[in-house]
Amino acid sequence: MENFRRAIGLRIKENKEVYEGEVTELTPVETESAGGYGRMVSHIIIGLRTTKGTKQLKLDPSIHEAINKEKVSTGDVIYIEANSGAVKRVGRCDAYATEFDLEAEEYVPLPKGDVHKKKEIVQDVTLHDLDSANARPQGGQDLMSVMGSMMKHKKTEITDKLRQEINKVVNRYIDQGVAELVPGVLFIDEVHMLDIECFTYLNRALESPLAPIVIFATNRGICEIRGTDISAPHGIPVDLLDRLVIIRTLPYTPQEMVQILAIRAQVENIAIDEESLAYLGQVGESTSLRHGVQLLTPCMVLARTNGRDQITKLDVDEIKALFHDAKQSAKLLAENAGQYIT
Image (tube, one colour):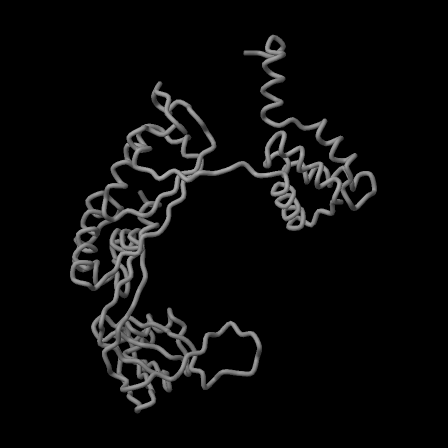
């Protein structure tokens, strides 16, 4: 369920009242603590500048923590939400840009208009982000705190009830035009390894309007569904299989195998001549591409042991004789079944 909700995005647009500009002044004002045992920040003075003017603000000390968390300094462009006091650092003002070709800092232009304005805030979150934010007792920040205020507080774990409440709020935001659903992609490899309970859950979850695009991958034919004695195509229940669009795939050609092996050898810095590469492609065609790729490393080890920096056909021949693929191993076990413990 967690991965399911990670794959569902929500793009939320809100018009918020903010104070935005380049930071020209950042001065924490300290006073003596009540017990007289030290000093504490009573408030913070911050100056913001835009193309239209400047404004000095006196902020609550709690906002000082948010400013420190965002690592705001003079010359940064920020905005502060008037309602929640949330602080967001947009970047460094481009007036401070240098002539370096490469910098880690992101430079942004000086904001236009007044310091105090209404701004459209666009935030991309996943449903899992909202689940996590509202499961914590302290709630979230920014948009999450707004949505969290609609929920019950002091939840400590992500429960089905919490997810249902999140879904209600999300659906309301979508109906009001405030949010837009952005379905992602969930890729499940070796899907035949799932049992009947997982397939039952997936069958139900895919019917939900808040469902991502799900891609199943498997290399199995007719096999048993795990947890049952029923055989089905690809090990997937027929009622779920009926809901899928099956993509037609074709085996790799010898030329494609050689090309893939060449790319893999280049990535792993393995030197191999054309004859050996073509021969390894034939090995992959007779066994599997995965087996051909796996033989690259032992071939390189053998070549270096013999004092060479490049793989030759003799190396591939010797390694091929040492290592069996799955089909050869199964055939060997079948032919010599009496010699093994069962």
